[in-house]
Image (cartoon, rainbow over all chains, first blue to last red; front, side):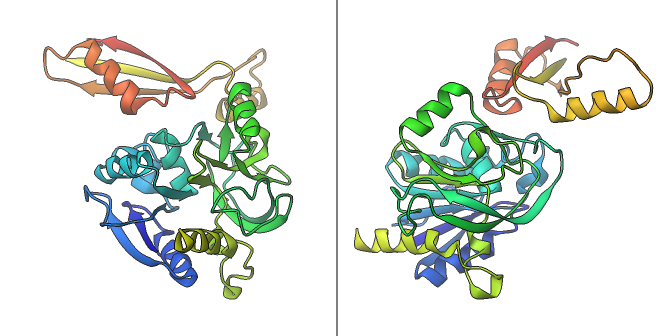
Length: 222
Length: 77
């Protein structure tokens, strides 16, 4: 199973994501944002957390227009898998691969802590290791994680079972307390919490490891 | 030539920064500030002959996120 992790100037969770993929058994290639092509045969693309381009203009906006994101869009259009975490989620909404947008936290504070989430669906490679309704504890670390979705979009996401995770105590004001959403074909996940920071006993928790194990198991079977 | 682009959060999108500014104005004793919305102004220095249509394209592709933001353009500002 081949994974590619995109690296932008200002990414700072790229190596954590690489380690989490490798621990689950993937072969990982790091791909610089100025590259035009993803490596041959990539099964899943990881868009990491961090502060791409210093969060200038809007979080993820400039990264979303970098050369490698054209390849990312083509990969997703072909039915390829992708996961965007934190700033990676912001990049995925800015590319319009995922719907909605992420705004400044409602309390205007940068929040860095482990929070309880509820897994809303097990119907994706990312969440198949969990039962729907399970509580997991995964760290968040963001200033702009306030997910924006109007009533129509919320109804669509819920109706199509595309809400992957919700916050139990909604720390950032997200619509519907949404912490992670799936694309219409369920092959792209964007989430603000950091499963790669809860993927090893040394992290203080392993609740996030299932995300990567789920990806590996599904793509190795396929 | 110059163009100026104003980007604002759309009506109905909660603006927590504007709300914090409104609170701070109240704290300074300014009464009757019923709402504050904070946006941004982007000044572009453009080659002569650049059309408003091109600037619109810039807004749609990068300068504004039209999911949550609206924009207006002043040409020759």
